Length: 564
Image (cartoon, rainbow, N blue to C red; front, side, top):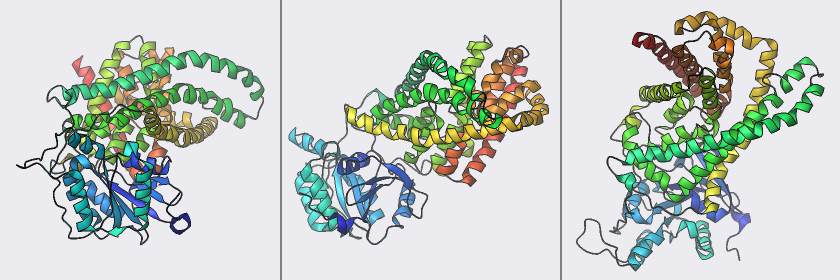
């Protein structure tokens, strides 16, 4: 029987606070049986996942990854209303450090404490391996420590395994949320004294760890792009054959409507690119990433790559999003909600600049193949990677690069065999973002591009920048693919036209493809960035990216000539 009254608490809001990798999302999903939708927390710029239960709205704030994220969390907590409750989540294996870091953030707020990963402590005690860290004596039994904390703080403290929460534990949490107590301002909990570390793997090796981490990130992306493109190669002719009978009747429509439906950028013309080429890539990569998250592997990769990337203002978690953009930039940008507050803007900029999505990467390969210069993919990827790192280093904030802003998550996460239901829950969020965020924007942009093409605006823009092509040692004919690639990245396929390729040297092909790919983010990505951040942020990103792209393209065009 339900022990709480929905009518009394239907407006109550539960704000969930915790560090990265504490099982926050898993716990809330288990409590509510719901998947999340995202929104900005009221009065702040903090983007949160929201879960709706019968009686409560759970707001899962971004996990605290760096010390600087505490400032962001404090801003969100200032917006709490009188009937809001804090659900503070700490990890049993790091409970002393988590309580010391998080209790000051919630002092004077009302709430309860849930300690996750309690099964790790229980199994360690059962095996007789629980020992104190830096203490001569064996720590007190865990149950006794938690009982003392309850007595000295008057708080409700619940211990759970978030992945296998019982009905009794759910009822206990909901009952505690009915009557939350204030977090004591002066309370300093006695030390538990234990510190449980999972077994190390090759990812923690000082010389091989970062290489293995990069490989673990790249392999799923390569498999996803290769697998999706293999599927699309087989499916696309079938779909095109099915569409062919519609073209003749639709060609009789008024010219403006015909352009919108079956023109160069028409809805019917472009839909196969979206549903046959892009969607399988997103789904496959989302499943891989879901397995990484569910197993705890993503946290290990984050830690392994963090020292390498911090000097550029990024973290290992940010790199996951940048590589995710190889499938589609839109869900990658949306997924940056889970990034640290000090590096999210830099991560979005890196995605917009250096993540060659399935359209862009496929079109790039197509141009190099048509030019009979497939080897150009190696210098292209090397130059794209190098310039993206330089670009992020220049635009990143000092806080993101500071050694005084250390990671607060543990050194190693526990590895678990991922269950299919958890993998699907993690992947479903990314897939839903693609279906309900990326696709509607794509369709709107397709209509706009069709109208602009019908009005001759796109051709006029190409004519305007024709004289500028000489700056990059390119012929005027290169202007149209560069303009079209600024709308949709597969527009750079126009470089593959035989007449155009006939007048281009290998260096010019490389320069043209690079410039078209990085000059501006496509319109779909740009609109997503505007919605996720702000118009001001998007305009600043546009100007910085265009300046950087022009500089790097000039360096490639003329520096390549000097090398020759």
